[in-house]
Image (cartoon, rainbow, N blue to C red; front, side, top):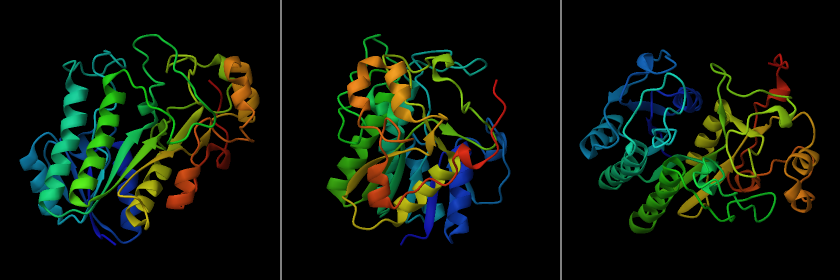
Amino acid sequence: MAQNVLITGGAGGCARYAAAELVRHGYTVTLFDRVTPDQGRYPWETDLPFVLGDLTSLADCMRAITLARAEAIVHLGAIAHNTERQPFQRGMQTLPEDETMRVDTMGTYYLMDAARRLGVKRVVFASTFYVLGLGFRISKKPFAVEYLPIDEEHPNRPEDTYSLAKLLGEEILASFSRAYDIQTVALRLMGVDYPHWRRHKFDQAPEARPNHVGGPIGGTFQYVEAEDVALACRLSLEAEGLDPFEAFYISTDTSLAEDTRPVVERVYPDLKEMAAALEGKEGMISIAKARRKLGYEPQHSWRNRPLEPKA
């Protein structure tokens, strides 16, 4: 099992928890990013080794891997929105329209090229459930759900650059797995929530929520806690018997107090027949494959902590 791990996007929120999880389990961790953790959007302090550099530079990627003596990489670095749709959030820096495609696609390519040159044999990649195409429906045409619960075999039909770049990133990983015998894992994360920055509201009537995703599916009501992202990263580093490339949907829970099926029937009546397959609090997107092949079991649901006041 690899012991020296490089984390890209090392100043970000997910890296904060992934690093803590890996260190707690005996890994030696080095962080790699364009800014230091104390200069990030949500600053945090760490004494872990840090390499300043850019994913879109092959030289920087090779330098980071070399300094970390990395045997494995957890690739969390990315622009996490589509820059052709700006401003994405109030106060966010305006970037060139092609920046998401450039950084997320070419950054993944250069990192994988550096990895194969330097003998790294396992890479875990933070992908997204948006690869399906249910988010940012630029065409305004409905996202077509073929069955519920959705799993990794469901067709992907992305339209925006963020979703497309992540899907292309998965293809880059798969191609390097075929060519260079590198074990790669893509974790399709569902709406990350952080202890230091609560983005999601829980136990709300879904009809009252803003339809921020678009299409007939305004959202799957699922999310993943950063600590569970960290758990999935570690399990992906340790799992045996995987295919050379594997993709897994990763969530913690739904944000609904009630069972999923009646909510889907009420909010998405066109999916009523498909929803009959949903049981209890099971999400519209299944994490069964991650449970089966990674041994992933979410640990940090909002149901296990005091209920937050409703907005």
